[in-house]
Length: 97
Image 1 (cartoon, rainbow, N blue to C red):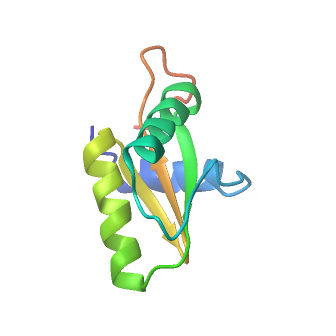
Image 2 (image 1 turned 30 degrees about the vertical axis):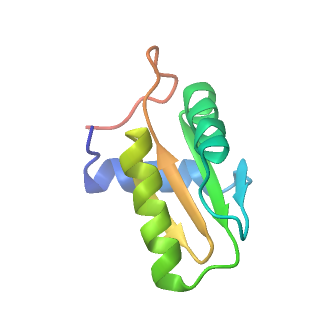
Image 3 (image 1 turned 90 degrees about the vertical axis):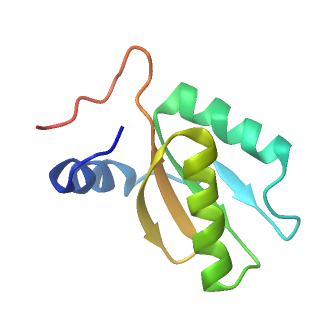
């Protein structure tokens, strides 16, 4: 599901006060980290992930890879933090049209 610009702005506003749920260190993106991101997205719908110890291009590539593998939308990237949204089976967050 692709979110439009209005929905992206709305989700960024909701994500702003959130703390990162998953932290990715120097070991990179492992299967265990991906499983944890999957669990967090299933439970929360909207999460932040912190990527540490990488260059800017590597961080962006890793965040894009997370979005691709989890089926989530990358809604924001600020420094080392990326925000992801994936609607639940029974969505809690209602997006504006």
